[in-house]
Amino acid sequence: MELRIFIVKRFLLMILTLFFIATIAFVLFRVMPGNPTAVVISPALDPEAKQALMHQFGLDKPLYVQYWLYISNLVKGDMGVSFRYREPVMEILWPRFINTLVLIGPAALLALIIGLLMGGLSAARRATKFDSITIVGSLTIKALPSFWTSMLALMLFAYILNWVPAAGMRTPGYEPKNFYDQFVNLDFLRHLILPLSIITLHFIAEPLMTMRNSMLETQGEDFIEMARAKGIGERKVIYNHWVRNALLPVVSIVPMMVGHIMGGEVLVETVFSWPGLGREIVNAVSLYDYPLAQASFFLLAVVVVGLNFISDIAYAALDPRIRLE
Amino acid sequence: MVENQNCNDEETRSPGLLGPIRSIGRGIFNQFKIITGSAFGRIGLIGMTVFFIMAIFAPYLAPYLPYKETYHLNGDLAFLEPPSWEHLFGTTLMAQDLLSQIIWGTRRTLVIGLSAAFGAAFIGTNIGLIAGYFGGKVDLFLMRLTDIAYGLPFLPFAMVAVLIFGRGDMVLVLVISSILWRTTSRVIRSQVLTLKERPFISAAKTMGASSSRIIYRHIMPNVIPLSFLYSLIIAGDAVLIEASLSFLGLGNPNTISWGQILFYCFSSQRMRVAWWWGFFPGLCIVLLVLSAFFIGRSYEETINPRLREM
Image (tube, rainbow over all chains, first blue to last red; front, top):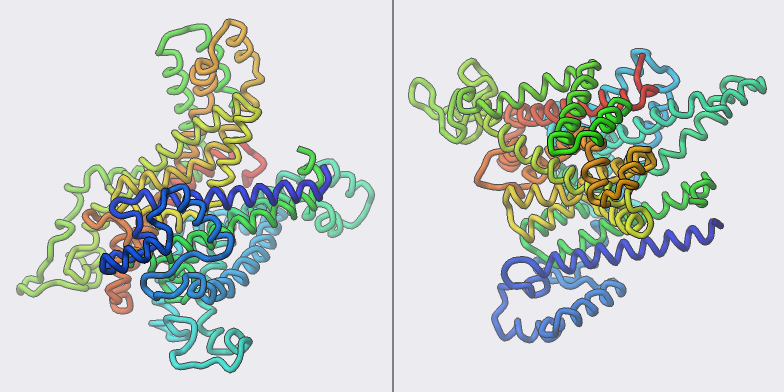
């Protein structure tokens, strides 16, 4: 199969998945006990205003019309009005989304780099003390609840040692001079460092173990023996032949990692009061703000599914065998 | 997997209900030997046993009632007491004994973790069996479904489900198992793909056995041990998810769990004065989940000896 056809196929699959998830959201928010119109209209309004809004949102129409409206609004990026903020949800979520990205983008990248390096080293030094420590270490990291490590880090570094601020993204009262100043300044970095380190720590384990396993799987392969037999240096054998081939399975775990990160993100943002998408969804859920909860859920799904798509393409570009299946 | 195949040949010869049950039993016994054969497995098994004892004998082990206020000798409320001989893990803001709360919390944590794991294993094994055995369009459809389950951001999905269906243990179990079956179904499917090419399956086919009979009487006994072990890893994940949801205040408010203790600790803002309140419940979560993962690891080493550190 040609790469282009593969990409088109995967792209259609991504659209299908998103469509499916949107449908799950539609069904979930309409089968709930009580009044299903509560998704769009706050139950606190008086009956007349409710009636007017019901008509405006088309909630007096049959379900299949509503479903059609829902999907077409979704395509246009219109996901309703938040009960709590009384503003379109997309306008509320967009800045939160950026705040989440500045946290998880660097964290995922760091985790991937550190994980790959340590995993590779661990495999190369198999059966040494370093190796057993990394194995037990990464199993332990996987068993740690991320909200608990966040709480402990908060206790130690913010309360006891007083090195970093305990909550938020900026010192209250701070007004950024321009867009870049929002993220490139010392105050922001001091707030960022703790949640960033926690998320990084939690997501080292997955790429580390995958890299180690995959290095050990490729270890005895003929092409490595071949490279050695050709007499090129051991360093070259390791980096150009062994590591390169071992990297492939790691690409395929990236989407799963992102799914995990999104879950961990919700908890870490809650503990550190980081004004991101994760904390917003927690608030929306605990305050019964249905449109906001629905939209943040869908937005998170878009991120996960989108990265899934990218990693699929990357895998296929790196390993032509995948396209043939 | 070689041992499992032997017992299956025997099973095809002796019909009756006892056959598959015996071979499943032997399969599980074989897994037990695998687990105790590795250091990881032994440590994990010991940890699991300790938590099971805590859960079963909670009323006898807990020194106080979990919700009851405790007092000093002079009659003062003993709130936010640091660990001491009277209160090994200290007390909470409501003057409850933390150790007793943790011991009682073990029950609910284990029950939810294990039922969710059982549910996930049940769904995942069936989907894996059907997809692997029938192949073709059925396989394609079920595997796309698995892909979608992988694509859902899990914690947000669980939160939305709790928002809609309410806070309760049953909801938690259903939500967790409705996602976590994905791992099991992939593993079981690939196992079935190799199993269905074996001679004993074609033998059963020539004898006119129906598809469901082949799947459930001949293939399933061979994959049950594998799905049993995967359900252990799922149990670990389920415990983590239950704790996370409870920590966000989305657990069942009428019972006690480790995540919930941490929720009360965090929302009371007393973490900076009472480290023990936030520390011990989390430690228990880690130890329990780690035990499950260690057992899983011992098994992984056996099927793939290259991973073992020699």
